[in-house]
Length: 312
Ligand SMILES: Nc1ncnc2c1ncn2[C@@H]1O[C@H](COP(=O)(O)OP(=O)(O)O)[C@@H](O)[C@H]1O
Ligand SMILES: [Mg+2]
Image (cartoon, rainbow, N blue to C red):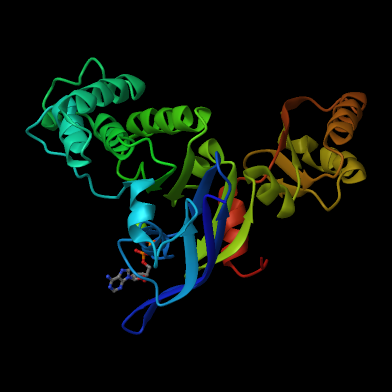
């Protein structure tokens, strides 16, 4: 395991930040720690990156205990925090070279590594501009590059896209995908369910300092409700007829949305249900505007989980 966490506890005064936090991250995978504000994401990342000591429990990163071997851990990790650590006046290239020197790479190696990373994160063209002229997405990619200077075994990204516009977000997503494609081990925290869905192999859902569910994005979605079929009819007058037909293939009573002329119902065998519904509607002469299968979004999954309706 690249990250192995057992029952971590941390309190700040009488505020419990981590309450028996468990996690496993396999080498070469991207794990998403997904949870709302105040769930304990940053606290866990700070403990795993040796910036903060836990009150109880145990954590190993890259094979070393964070409490007893912090220097060994530090040598093997990269950390990109919520607040940028780059110098605004310097260029991206100068920043990366500076980081390289801080990590004792030596001037020549630092220069080579900076060039590699600028290239890798799509900053080769803008590398010589002062960072204060960078867009949000460029800045965050520079943060990522700085976290990768030593080619770490494990990279921690704490809310890498928070505060970015959609374009910047996409740029950072591409950068993380490129890391993942190279087999990096990444633990990223996020409040965004679609972000986890886009980037990670495994999700751990954290709430109030503990993990309340885990699995691949697809597993989480299917565990909390399978596919739904949605039918939008052309004429609202057909809604009743269509509901009758849909009832025969669905697992439950179809939900009706009159305003949108839409029916929606859970189905078990997705392809058979779709085929049968299309055929039945056609045979009944009901004009259809749209028909589709839909999986529940991670937002729906998260709401279900944090309502306490489902436990891990
Ligand atoms: N230095 C601190 N002092 C007091 N409370 C803190 C401190 N750091 C975090 N907390 C509290 O611990 C909980 C978890 O915080 P944090 O790990 O920052 O959550 P997240 O990153 O998921 O938003 C929150 O209730 C937060 O207010
Ligand atoms: Mg945080």
